Image 1: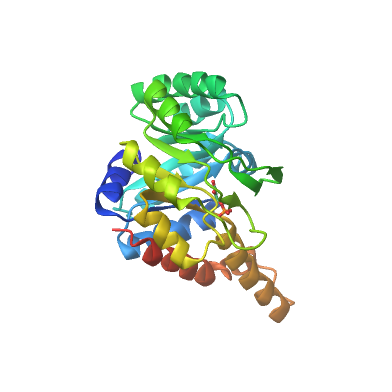
Image 2: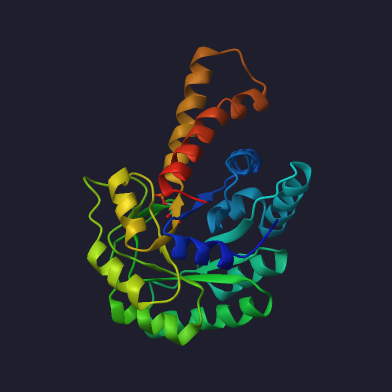
Length: 280
Ligand code: 13P
């Protein structure tokens, strides 16, 4: 069932676990994620970055692909189709009009007032259509879609300002996590995460979920994180398996065999994350 993330994240916040957000890049990844989460009987959020949307043809192609898979694979778990780091109102509107059930508007590179103004515009449009909205304050650093940026931690005042002035459904406060690989040990501000969670009524999101040691993920969940985004670790698991397969099968050329050789490694990683996040 294609839904927004409200019910799944509010339940996660109340019952102290996290819902996984896995980024998708193609049909096969989407199929593996849906099949594994169905097998585990847990809700899932499919994240689509602007770059991935462009790669797959566009939001309409993706929305139709996901709807088709839900029917053909007889998926019964709650599935949320979510724009990851939408950079503008226009991007979010396009995805909503195509059938996405959730969007992240990321205007975190702008001044706070401008971030609030753009986010509010997205919320007004999204909520009319029953679509949930995530926003970001501070700035999550690292590299995503080949774009590298510096990190700036969010303050409680910024979190309160964006939440109270926009009506967003979830917030990603930058608190030291980065996209892609970490240089050294991740340094997350758990104390501030806990205070923000206790002050806001909406669920918190942790970006840059790859490469954070398990005990820190558990701590983030204990401090109130309800949604954790994972992309790089799935990419690494899949590509390592495919590389091994190609090295061992130099004459293989069937794309179904080549792409499919990453299936089990990717599904194992999905299972590992769901178990770590204690998703219910
Ligand atoms: P990683 O690539 O570090 O897992 O981050 C994913 C993410 O935060 C997507 O928004």
